Length: 115
Figure 1 (tube, one colour):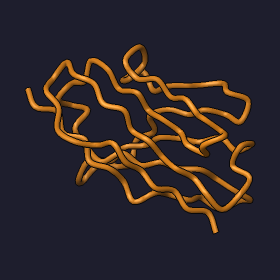
Figure 2 (cartoon, rainbow, N blue to C red):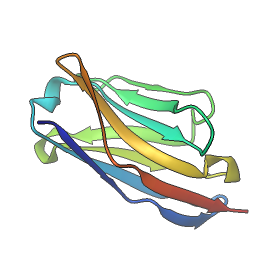
Figure 3 (tube, rainbow, N blue to C red):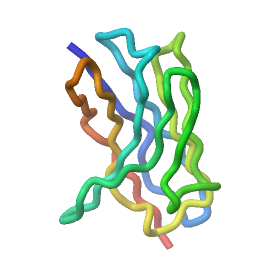
């Protein structure tokens, strides 16, 4: 059973930074692509960033240049470093991976950016 547990959310002023963490367990996730999504109430879940097992990264245009995704395979952890935060980044952030055809999600961590 794959488990994903996010942490690191909180309240920050606009222009500030936060680092989210996602600890993964239950599978050989070192070879799995890991993703961050976010979802505001009433909105569809929005893809934010991806890091492949080989370390390649991709970002949504809305966060490119401000957010950085990384992974520490020894710790089975994926990070999302968020800089220059804006009020529109306020929402719940979710960690995701797809393992053997099944999508797994964490419980989410709330990020609130005050203007």
